[in-house]
Length: 223
Image 1 (spheres, helix red, strand yellow):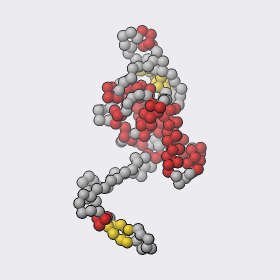
Image 2 (cartoon, one colour):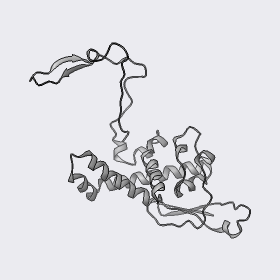
Image 3 (cartoon, helix red, strand yellow):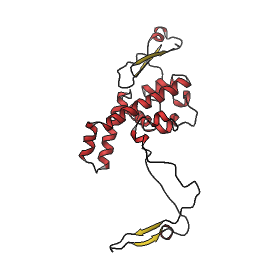
Image 4 (cartoon, helix red, strand yellow):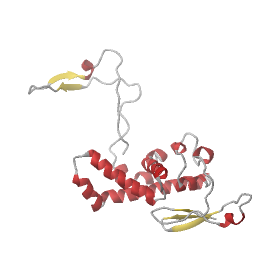
């Protein structure tokens, strides 16, 4: 069978040996979650997400390269179980990421350069790399895939309340639906020109833009 170790609970799912397996079919493959140590004595050949994805073709999961042990394990499962395991993997990583970020140890690191966003992003990156390694994404390529999974949680499960509640930065995200629908004309917003004088000069957005070819670019982070 294939052994699944998650949150301290163990379960099995049948493994169908191929021709020539012999005793290989009797071995177990362990998926490591929540930092629990496991081994993978049985290593199936790499499977591409596009070949056996538990999600529809357009789902963002299919953009993964599938080079890590946790993702290969998910790809070896049936559709329903694979979706459930990916969700539980993401929730587990989000909760650990949340606990670490709010811990006294990490908060003290953030406070070293409280006004330096590059510093805080670097601290966060190190925390998340620790999280994915402890969830079985071991190795340079595997670690990057783990980060992609962790940081894509709301894209993998956009309407899942359990995923949303797993981390404070998702639960209390101030981002919301854009109040301007597609193809909406941008309103003529009041602006002020900053200058060396003590009194800023009033103007409007339309006055500062060329008459034709208006372009508005919005950029931001989901988290």
